[in-house]
Image 1: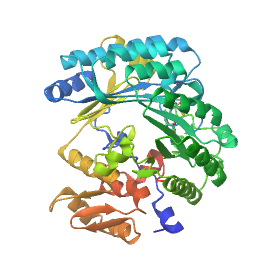
Image 2 (image 1 turned 180 degrees about the horizontal axis):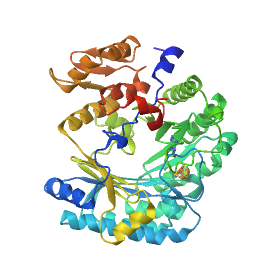
Image 3 (image 1 turned 60 degrees about the vertical axis):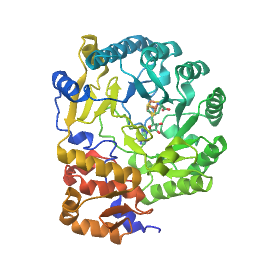
Image 4 (image 1 turned 180 degrees about the vertical axis):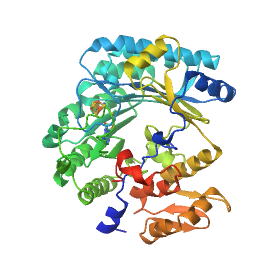
Length: 451
Ligand SMILES: C[S@@+](CC[C@H](N)C(=O)[O-])C[C@H]1O[C@@H](n2cnc3c(N)ncnc32)[C@H](O)[C@@H]1O
Ligand code: SF4
């Protein structure tokens, strides 16, 4: 079903990406002390049997891409590497002490910023102690910048057990790359992709972005042409999130008039999606694609797809420990985020203190809604029991849910909410209606738009 321009406009409103629930702006601990965190951790986490994933945030980049919404610090001074790794190792030690035993990891993801800003030796110094106690069948992945990923870095990470790498591509057209201050040739991407493949990396993923400044239909076409030639196993097709009000994003160098309007942006997405589907990729969630034999595609088929701060993932552990400035940890009891300020982060850990500064402790209702929202985001349907909180929401927002149904986004039957194919890009709108923290008045200042 093709949605009309009117329907697209209607639902193209700011909405959370639900990589956490509640979304980070709605967390209930604005000042989360290390003591409070430690108590929660020791009482509720240590006693259980655990599978643990670790997210490590390496925030440095050599130059600013002006579209970027990630937590990063721009510097060419590589002297920052060693002290930052020292702090990460110190932080890891604190967690091992709290745990009372050295932590076995089943998953490690290194994100940024640019993880490959760090030399191969520093990466090895950081990861050897963490990977020493790894489960062999686990998932180990990192983000690489195609312009700054050497063969040596790929080799060291491979030796340590990493088998998945995602490269940031965004768009191959020069005038778009100029608008976002990120010049990166097809040849460079080809070389690093082929080197990783020859070395034995099992999953090579490319990040593409639609809706970038000055990006037109022929740019998306060119980007997909090149992508299909290199045939990465997985593709993230992100909607450009325009959030210039978020401190530190540095989104500048282009004006709002350089950005495609809602309908044009949607057409860019549809074009990319149609071409990827006809080239044999499967659609995963609403912004990922993967070849059918990829773990992401298999997880979608088996209903095991998950969503974390890293987006759609096959990750499935009981807890995620976030290391590094701005990193977020996720537990059954809630969330905790580290100080975003690199200096303050380092000062805390170097003094032997966990650098957590805010977080969330789930109420019973939070935990229930989190399950439903995760199911909608990952499986596009959720079922509920009579008398449940979902039934209450359906009653309360009856006319909104009826509009979703009438506009072809949602089917409601047999105590199930089922999102249609046409409704998938708007799954966030449906989740937002279930979200009691959702503040209509402030949406514009809080989130990027659905498409
Ligand atoms: C940490 S970056 C990638 C790693 C590495 N720094 C690089 O640039 O190649 C992760 C990905 O987030 C996506 N991203 C960053 N800012 C974005 C934004 N404002 N909207 C949508 N996607 C964005 C990009 O696709 C980027 O490749
Ligand atoms: S896109 Fe990557 S390299 Fe560019 S600023 Fe963001 S994190 Fe750094």
